[in-house]
Length: 169
Length: 265
Image 1 (cartoon, one colour):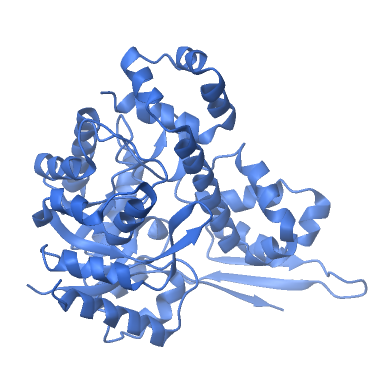
Image 2 (cartoon, chains in turn blue, green):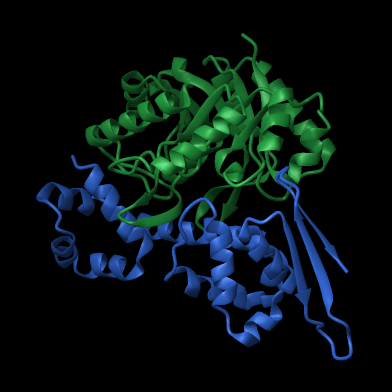
């Protein structure tokens, strides 16, 4: 019974909806492209397509949940657009490493159009960039949201005790 | 045997944890949360609580060599926390050049048994502590030469690791995939279980999920009691990642876990 090869194929199926579609519509062609042995093809044939689809959706849903936790106000402001926009982003971008949820959130924000980004919370965007920058102290100038208002200064401090503090002046 | 009740450290729970509440006797830290900073916090925690270090991203089920940079970081957190145990999942998060970011199941086959055993031995050698491996929950149920409990039994025997049994994951898989968790436990060598994870389950349109966002339900407490009455469990760890309760509710929930551990089931 294969193990290692099936893990590699699963990763491909779970991360790529075009590959899942090919596997469902033309399994022989999928196996030929993947270079699977007969035993591996049999193991793959034993998988439940509905479960594969559910697992793939669950991975995206977990990523969406992490980004909602990282950018609660921005996602709330995007409203019903937030999930479809995120899913469009997530299907083509798989962040890597232990900062993947932060990278995911930043890439999502930076992939938005200017109009969509205008809905998002600039404070969250600044905090995210600061968190990924790895510095202890950060100073950001936030443009005023309203005409005739002064810009604000955001001071960020990473205390090293697993906490980030911020002051908005 | 002394059995303690603890909590997974989260930044949002930090102030309560730092107040040293009487109900809290053990802390589990997630290694990845301390890869970039937080060493002082680890030292502070280590002076006050027994600790285990829990991994999310070592991807022990990935064929090939372990990510040596990730293992080094994991070992550094383990040393800073003076951890009693280290733990990881029976799963893969990366394979074929893709980082899926979350846990995915592996086939319970002889080949995967070898891969996981080898990786488990490497982690224990590098961290100089026993590794506890955790069962995951997944929408995808993979069958192989072995049943899941048989796979876990052989894994412990071949690698020398122990088990971190996630009671909630077991219960959720049982509901979603239609099996009896007590039958599953009857097949498992319970002497290998050292720690338990528990969190309230949630539901969505597709079934039960482990969102770590709800209070532990009575059916989970009953399963916890059942396991505690039969396995040499040293620590029960509550997991919570969102909808954080207030201090009193958290203390109450930990007390409920302690009572459930004492109950004979």
